[in-house]
Image (cartoon, rainbow, N blue to C red):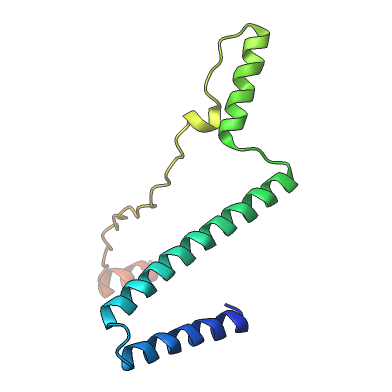
Amino acid sequence: MTNQQANDLFATLKTYINKVSEGEKSPAEIAASLNTWARESAESLKAKIAEEVEGQVQRLGFIKRDEFDRLAARVAKLDGVKPTKSKASSVKPKVKKAATKRAVKEQPVRKTSAKKVAARKVK
C-alpha cells in the first residue's frame, strides 16, 4: 500500500467516523459501505494481478494450456491423426510419500563373563 493510498483510506475512514458521530449514518450503514468498498477493491486487485501475469506470460513466450490443446488438435487434424490429450493435462502429479523409518532389529549383545575373557587371554 502506498502512502497516498493509506492517506486516502484514513481520510475515508475519518469521514465515515464523522458521519456516524453527527448521526448522518448508522454504524450498520458504514459497515455495509466499508464491506462493499473492500469487495470492490479486492476484485480490482485480482483483475490487475491477472492482467500483469498474462502480460508477463506473453512476454516470456508461454501459452495457456487450452491454447496448446487447441493447437495440438488442429495439427493432429491436419496430419490426419486422431488428437489425444496432452501428456501434461492427462498425467496426475505424483505425490511423494514420506520416507518411513524401518525398525532395525538389534542383535542381542552377548555378554562374556570375565572368567572366559581371562581364560582366552591365558591360552
